[in-house]
Amino acid sequence: MTEQIAGGAFHRGESEYESARRATVWNAATPDRYPDLVVQAQDADDVQAAVRLARREGMRIGVRSGGHSWAGNHVRDGGLLLDVSALGEVEIDADAMTAAVGPGVRGHELLETLGAKGLFFPAGHCPGVALGGYLLQGGFGWNGRVHGPACMSVTAIDAVTADGEPVHASEEENPDLLWAARGAGPGFFAAVTRFHLRLQPQPAAIANGVYLYPGELLEEVFTWAASIGPDVAREMELMLIVHRDEQGEIEVAVTGPVLASTEEEKARALAILGTCPVRDRAKLAVPDAPVALADLYAGVHASYPDEHRYDVDNMWTHAPIEQLLPGIRRIAETMPAAPSHMLWMNWGPAGGPERPEMAFSVEDETYIALYAVWPDGAGEELDAANSQWATPRMREMEEHASGIQLADENLGRRPARFAGEAEMARLDELRGKWDPAGVFHPWMGRL
Image 1 (spheres, rainbow, N blue to C red):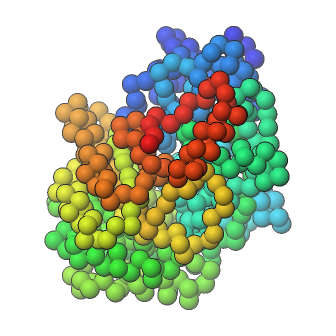
Image 2 (image 1 turned 90 degrees about the vertical axis):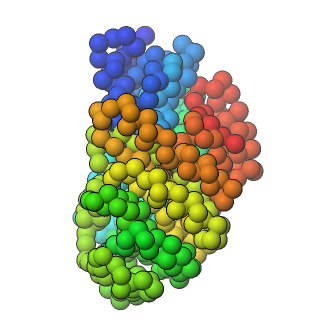
Image 3 (image 1 turned 180 degrees about the vertical axis):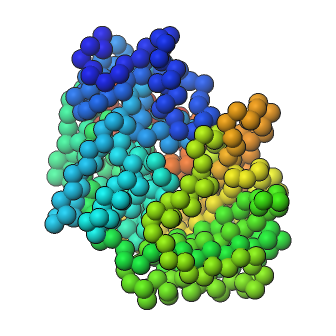
């Protein structure tokens, strides 16, 4: 049945099945869901063979590229789990400022390759995140406030459709499939084998500013951050991270990585961090630290360590800070131990590039995400406690939310709005066109 697949194929019950299943999820909290077959594709031909096999056998398909879906959306009970992480080819045309990449390419590795050629792409913030799922769900990465969600820089895709046939989708050819690929996320109804990307010049001046404030100043710091949102340079990603310090006390870290074209532009962007009215009470102040992208990745990795369990949820909002502060206080009061944290990011899409017509259609002024993070093997009691923090806190703030983003979704536990009403209707229509038999799994939840 699997003889046409050059890569590995593991049936449930076989000796190597469980290791193959667990390998598809980076989160150590591997979901208790068991596909009937795990296929490790080596190339596009394997993808085509796997899709045809699933169609023949009446199996639904979940697709994994890097496994960084917190909820393990690709791992379902029954059906076929298609692992495309080995599709890691990279072709760069530096003169045309374009690239063609496989879905298994890791974003930080792509940036290393591009950097040697003076080029850049808004890849994801976390090391290890593969481009497949990242681009399909929208893609919030470095300099995303300048270039928009990374899916905007996808000019075409190559994919295998539900009938097992290869297809190319661009603005000129099968444009509806490209429209869906820009934002459908884990509900996309084809298996992408290659993304065609538009590149940018590498930012010449990269730096970060970091200020640490005691938890007692939480309200003052958040009120300030909300007030300056429209004035934050597009080249800066202003983030507030609430976590517990080494003594277990709440701490608010203000960080503002800047990827700018010039030193002058960088300095102007960083200056806003010094306008916080309680700046003189900061526990630590680093106004301007020149860094490389590798340093930024290392800093992010410290908040998202390997071999840990994660439970995550999120929201978009434009609610006034006065309405959000009670929920933020509640989040801080119930915060699990480090490295668990809350992220606040001033996104402000209105000041960025014009969005094209695409499935991705929900974003807002402010992004809030909660990450419960704890060591694997810490015990069932801690597992139970930490997995009951993020989603309940987001549910308490739902009245102030305009939706969620799919990067940090927990739709199986809390269905939420991740696309506009018209876009969801069109996604349903296109699923009926491209996957009428329902070969590919939809989202685990939706509104």
